[in-house]
Length: 458
Ligand SMILES: NC(=O)c1ccc[n+]([C@@H]2O[C@H](COP(=O)([O-])OP(=O)(O)OC[C@H]3O[C@@H](n4cnc5c(N)ncnc54)[C@H](O)[C@@H]3O)[C@@H](O)[C@H]2O)c1
Image (tube, rainbow, N blue to C red; front, side, top):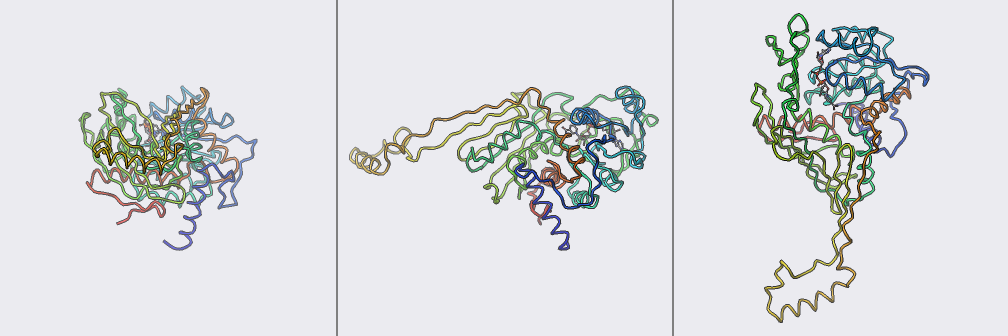
């Protein structure tokens, strides 16, 4: 890496971390000659990939920025293009070929909501064509694709946001505020999980009856993936295959880790190890449905070292309580997108004695001597712990994380700034470790990651 590039990446890193803390209101501003969109102008956007999330994103974008205008959509399956006209208006321009959208000068921004293997290609082409980009998570399908997306973003001077929208929820913002205020002392452990037990939850989405080589563009769908004969399951349930998706780690761990990085300002782990299996959904998929990963986070200026355990179990027929628990030396923050419980617990200075302890096994004279010394050493006020405190937070009913995430994107587009709450540096620092969780599982080895330089360590 040349020194200019290293300098840039360091600047981006620092700016990205500052933006993520929320403590710096200044926009991220490395490239200054950005074309600003006047606050009175409508932002015209197109969605590339009008499947399940493409529709969710399009609606959230319109809720988040009512002055944004949805003008075009690309998708490879005709039924979804027909749905666009039915749901959003017959004047929306629709095409199978996303490049037709990129050619249009009247489109300011695109939402990239395709399967994961297309993210890097369409994002880079969009930036090159001068579009602002909202790209779904995980930012890339493979670790070695990350730097080229960051470089393309830097060169473009355009605004970019990655789509782990939960970090724009009131609850995650409250978790961050409490953590940064030191409410749980020094962090030492995080656990976060996203279990499911139903067929749709395990990605077996409905396949339309008219799916065929006539109604969809199979060759383009394959993209840089290996050539395979047409298979509607692969097209509509692409998450089940390594060729197009990123397994439970890229699909779900990425939300969990993004939340933890947002709250702690961490740049990422150094060592990553996974264990997993295909336990229940033996339906032809080639990715595990149970995955547990341990990620070791080093101490930084912003937090102490900690361990993180991430879990997805698609065959959890037991009780499911999906949340994130960040544990420190003085308490824990347990949170979801909608609520949060802070529990504060501080130890008394005096260690105590008696009960389940060796004290009762001492001779009578030794017990007396021990007590004498203990009383001399520990004054009465050091013997009581503060009572355990619990603080609960409920997100306001109207809180709409998805819309907030888009509002942040569109506001930065209008300001003419690159940075967003989840810019590509932040996005890659979340994506790479979870992709490494997959590598660890498939290669059966520990993956070493450099979270500052953002590269695999040998
Ligand atoms: N942020 C979130 O909470 C969240 C939730 C779900 C999905 N996602 C992400 O959104 C993306 C899409 O997931 P989905 O569930 O909507 O998948 P989906 O299969 O429902 O939709 C994907 C669509 O992309 C289209 N497509 C594929 N290649 C294309 C190309 N080259 N050009 C144009 N269109 C193309 C397909 O025709 C399909 O309709 C994934 O990256 C996924 O990880 C994010």
